[in-house]
Length: 115
View (cartoon, rainbow, N blue to C red):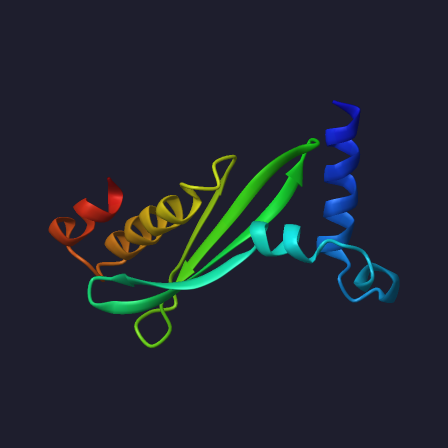
């Protein structure tokens, strides 16, 4: 358990302070690529962006997901979960709830995004 905690601490330092010169020489590039992700997804015929970032909370690894759709709305969907595989889906669901609350989409449009 101590090794896992130490690895998470070192990894979090590398992710939080990537501009520090001495960290560039450390072999965290592959681990960083595996944990960070930027991409696009389609929501109701609109191209939207997403970002997944690791976070440490109470010495546990969580993932934060953000979804936003430039050119359509300023609404931003957000999620924080321990599951790397569901973080984007939860951010899309949050986006859909916010868009529904603001009247941007209908309940019928939102339903598949909320499941």
